[in-house]
Length: 199
Image (cartoon, rainbow, N blue to C red; front, side):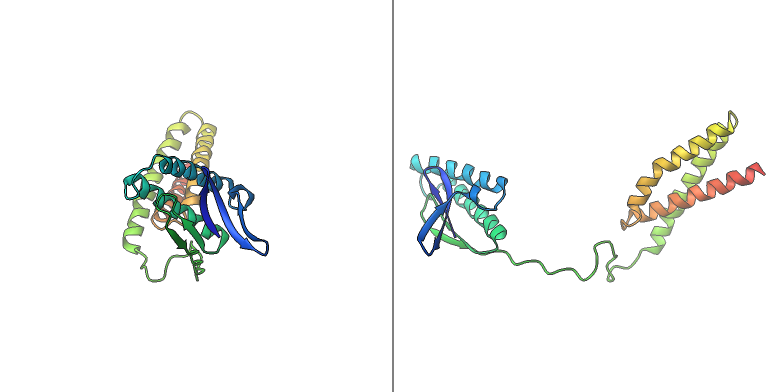
């Protein structure tokens, strides 16, 4: 397959049993964005070619580089090499299809085995977070409990309900998991403390 510019339009040429055939990129399964990018590039390349810009100028270099990038995208989508005729210099280049990445042996959320777990730092972060959450929840509950115990209960439910989605998302992120552990511990300690104050 070869990428060319014809009258300000990008075309892809290929050989089949009936001979050489040029097709519009929109007729191939390249995606609308890539097809539009090809036509925009072809318009600019045609305009530069018509103004007889020097082949070794900045505009020619930019058009050549963009054409090579687009040829690489086509090669990746079609999974086959794409030849590219530079509209300014007329040089023919071939862009190979990128190799498919090898599948990973472990899922992304599993911690890599070669990275040690920072237990000391992590537990310190969890302890500090737990202390802050415990003091905050107990202070809020006792302050509102003087007005109404139902108000304190509703406030606890709202605070924990607001924290729950963030804690749930952070539980598998390497750094934020320690904060998540601290929040859960802090809420549980605060509720245990509040239950003991009711007795």
